[in-house]
Length: 187
Image 1 (spheres, helix red, strand yellow):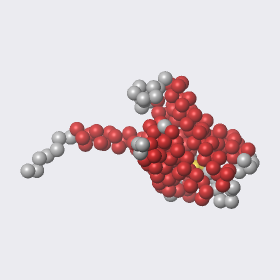
Image 2 (cartoon, one colour):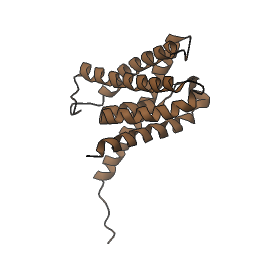
Image 3 (cartoon, helix red, strand yellow):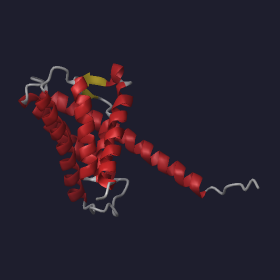
Image 4 (cartoon, helix red, strand yellow):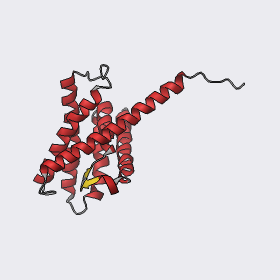
């Protein structure tokens, strides 16, 4: 048995969890409503985890979301929280799969270009925002403002993903530059 899949799930889940904890520091000015943040960094982590690690990335993020949702949806039955975690993760996975099909991106990501990422993000955040907020209403977790909540979630997920992707891109640029810089021999 190989442990690479479960390790990817663990890494995705921990990264999602820690990303949420970092994101909490922005709540005083970026929280729109319960469960909706106008800058949501974990959305980008979930997108990348599913894009790069597939089902294992999805599983890790689902578990991370379930653990966190038990904190921020106080008083909501555990089965609603579990279903919310599944709906949220599945909506993101559907958005990524649909955007890859629309953009003609290979499953091995060899033809993925930087310009594809914001388009993929837009499709994914739209599906996620509307699907998740429909679930909130159907489950009785929210009762009003469907369109404004869905659009706010979409905006926050898109913004968080954009920031996450830019930080990743910047890190790769710095890494490439550092790697290509001749090192001084101090011997």
